[in-house]
Image 1 (spheres, rainbow, N blue to C red):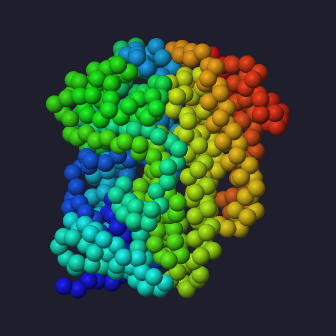
Image 2: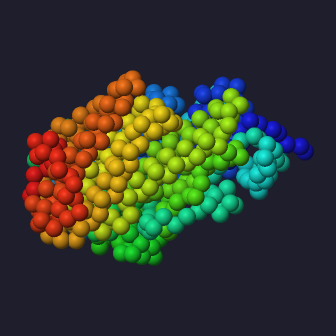
Image 3: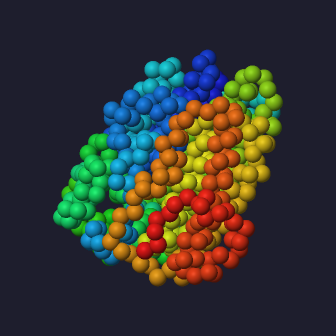
Length: 530
């Protein structure tokens, strides 16, 4: 048997690969795309995958860029934001600090049931004329030299090989090209994760019978949040799924919690009993409804190169992976897929790729490194009910203020904008790194107070406004004005956080931050020091 030739061959028909196929087809309607997926479709509704929680960029990408809003609203759950409980060793959630909103913020995000969603993506790909071959494995890959086509040798039914001008690796952690080309890099962030699904709703709202606590949220549906149960060096997630199942995860700092303590379900349950007894109680009562269990050792890694002028590229976990905290996975799929689509579009127009590849590579790695700074060395402070809430406010503001603006305003590939605003964006990136170091210093001398209180992010008017204006449609001048304004806000916020930390932990918190000299009246409000 012979093979088939295509404009683009995508390795992997999961979230990253199928989204890329749809985006390519939309940008280049005559593009001949084939997707090779090892698993047979349809997959189970509660698929054996993580990545259910989306945040603003990922939700915008799926709903608006790919045009799937109706499906998201109909078949999945609208998320009640992120919610954090500082509940290490505690069962009484009403007696600890809670960080989260009382009412849903305006910009939507979703809890994605990956099986339901990937089945929809497969159906949509075929409906749009994309060659989606499920049940097909990859035996080997031959990268073409120069202008030669790339060839993929397949297993399963159908043609034994396919070839294409573009080879796009979305093979997930298999990382076919990343491993073949030796591109995997240690990023200095070492953590483990275990997760499982229970075929029942875990309603955190019913964990305590305090009427005042239950009534703090409207509607009374904390269970729709991505709930984080936090402690020193770890956090646990609770994510509801539209299928009726609940996803439960344990994520730990490798230096503080060995993977052997969580890498089997009985061990994970014992670990929960020690660290998060309320969750352990809920899981133990539903052991007979366990759907699956999996774990990753040292799950985070970098990638030396994501895009090539030789017409290959990586996306999703086939390239680099950060951390599940803040759920950035779909965000970085959106960013990588957008850059790949731009490269394919320029190639079809006969334009030279190398300069754009260099720009997109530099930008992607900058976004990756800035986000990595939120995690690397920061897990020890996750159980700190004084420091983490302020860090979360900073991290959100940095995300909404810069990266979200570039995505929502379609500026990821705007070379002129980056040339003009590059110095200011770079100073803000450096400021973020300094702030992360400050949070670590603050935690080192924090008394760890954990009063019974709810910190409502919506009460910070400037914070709620940043979220509410994400979908504003801005012209060129408006985008630049917005970014400059957000950069100024972040510097003023940093000055306010330094004052806040100094008030809580002493004047040593000001060391190395003396250049943050905005007037107190200009500083965005923060939660009051407990």
